[in-house]
Length: 196
Length: 214
Image 1 (cartoon, helix red, strand yellow):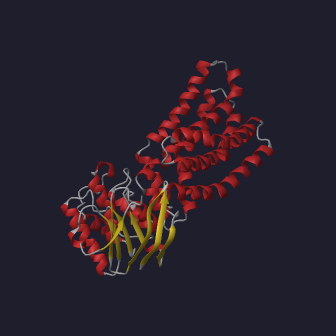
Image 2 (tube, rainbow over the protein chains, first blue to last red):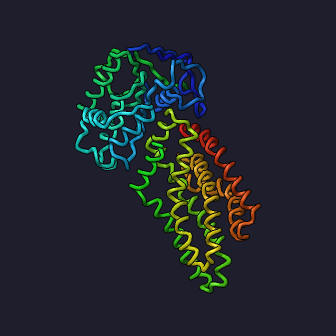
Image 3 (cartoon, chains in turn cyan, orange):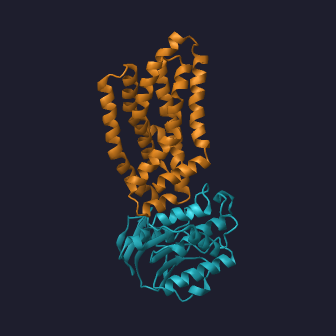
């Protein structure tokens, strides 16, 4: 479970958001909606535990159950997709065989580029490398900040399948997206409005 | 261990940074006799100090690059969120910095010393002082890099911020080597190394938390 209680964040002389309340139970998706600059990324950072300058409370059972994927998705240009994925999973204490890593990357249509450094990949492909982590992680709460952008239609549909499987197994999904995602049209929405 | 292997792998695939700081050092030592004097008697007493200054500057020059890519691509955020203790991440970063810019220079020191007409005994003391002193430089450089990473003018700010903290190391290191191993300076340098090793990674870890929340 993830619960947000009267969360407020004051940044650069104004409230980014004030008195936010929301609850996400296992199996539920929560969509963060708001214009550019309305504080979506800051909210994600607060939920992930990266940003601690806020009022109110964020209640989760276990910080280690959280997987945060931001705008910058931690794919190093010098390493190959396999090495990047292995590193990202090891950060969460997950050790896997190469076959599983390859399979996860193949699900995101990355199989020809596996032994090239990621600098040779396009932006969308790098994002897929980071997203392949979702297939293998054991984290129960996913924080996906704009994960659906920069992906083509097949990539988006793989991602939404992976997310739906996560929800079906009792996980929690919190995401933001400027495009409508039809599969998650029924998700609870948390709207961020700029305070004047 | 895995973090360290990753750093080394990234370094080997883009060796430009390590080569750049080594080139800088070799160029300074090559040009110095040409510009000042080729007379061995006048060069010899300058050798230890000159190589120490070059070591300090090349460490400073490489510092801001050692965290820039991890900050820009978000790896730093993920490392902060990982199960690894943050001080260990910072210590690994310092080790990687040391391997990429201090170690090559350390290995080149005998050649550079010979170019400045140093006696072999002086070269041995120089290397001993660099072995003890250069890790302190790396630890401070990573602290400075973490303080300034993501700021607009980080490469200009970093030397001003960190150079004063490197001065004690420079003084103790050069004094130890020029006095031919006087125990007081050696002990002080070793003590400074121990103190830096057990405090700076923790300080850097606190700064890292601030860096990722910007």
